[in-house]
Image 1 (tube, one colour):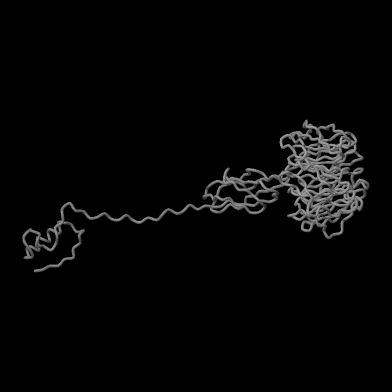
Image 2 (cartoon, one colour):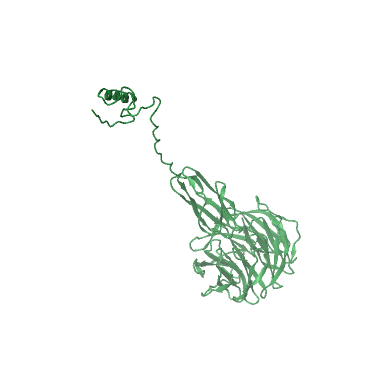
Length: 481
C-alpha cells in the first residue's frame, strides 16, 4: 500500500515520526529503521531559518529655502552682505541678490551689512532683514542705499573772516547756531563725504585750510596741519566721493590743483601729478557721483574742461575730448546724483545748458534742448539729491531760479513758479539730503534763508522762521552728514 503526502518542512517533527510508524504498519517499510521510509530523519536540534527583515524607505530629504532680496541706490563697489553673520555676499550692482546657502524650514535668518560701498555719499541699510524660514523662500529683504541725513551746515563769511556752523533739525529743516570759527578771508568751502572734515579757501592767503568736525556738536577745529598753497584764490572746490582726493580750482592760474587726503587727520598733501591745465579763468568744479570724472567750468572762454580720475592715485588726466563748448561766462557746473547729466550755469548768457554724460568715457554731449533762462547775475547752481530739480542763485535779481529735470532725458525746464524771492544778493543754494529743505546764503543781508521744497513742483516756500543770522557777506553754504 503506497501513500503520497505533500509535506511541509515547517510541520513538527512529531508529525513526521507518526507518519513513519503508520506507513510501517501498512507494510511500507522496516520498523523504526528510517532507511526504507519516505521521509528523511531530521535532527532534533534543527530550527527553521529566520525570516528576512522588512524593507524600509530612506528618510525624506530636509527641505531648504533661499534667502533673497533687492538692492537699490547703490553706487560703487565694496558693499558686502552677511546672513547669520556669515555666507559673505559681495554686491556689485543694484538689483536682485541671493545668498549661496539655503536654510531649512524653521531656521532663523538675519541679513546684515559687513562693509559699505567705497562711495561715502551713500549709506546702505537693511529692511525686512530677519525672521524665521517658513515653508517658502524669503524674497522680500530690501537693501536701500541713500545719502545719509544732513546734520550740520557751514557758511563762509568773507566780510567777517569767519565760518558759521549750524546743526540741522532733520524733521523741520531749522538751523540752530553752533560756534563761529575765525578764518582769514574765507571764500569757498567744501565738506568731505565722510562728514569729518571741512576745507576752506582764503582770498588773502591764497591757500586752503582744513578743519575737523565734532561729530556731536558740529563745531570746527583746525586740524593743526598748515594750509596748502594754491598760488591764487580757489573758487570751485570738490572732494571725491571716496573721501581720498581733493581738487581746488586755481582761478588766476588756469589750473586745478590736486591733493591726497590723510584718512585719519584730513591733512592735505600734493599728489604726484599735482595739477592740470584748464580753460581760461576756471571757476566751478564738479566730480561725478562715482568718482571717475571731473568737470571744470571756465568763465574766460565759455567752455568745460573734462578729466578722467585715476581710481588709485586720484590724478586728473584730460579726456579724449578734453573740452566742450558752453555758453558765455560759464561759471558753475553741477552733476545730477545719477551721474547721467551735467548742468552748466552761463553767467554771460544767463542760461543753464545741459549735457549727457557717457557712462563709460565720461564725455559730455550737449542735449538738444533750448537752455532755460536764469535771473540777473546768476552765480551758482545746485541739483537736489533726488535729481528732480535744479536751482540757480541770482545775485542781481535777488532771487533763485527753479527748474524741473526730466528723469529720462535730463532736460531742464523752468518750474511752475520759475523764480523765488530771497534776501539781498543770494550767492549759493544747498539742499538737504532728504530733498525737503533748501538753504540760501544771502550775501548782502548776512543771513541764511530757509525754505521747504514742494516735492511735485520744486517750488521753494519760506519757512515760518525763514532766516538765521550768519556773518558778513556769506558766500558759500555746504551741508554735512
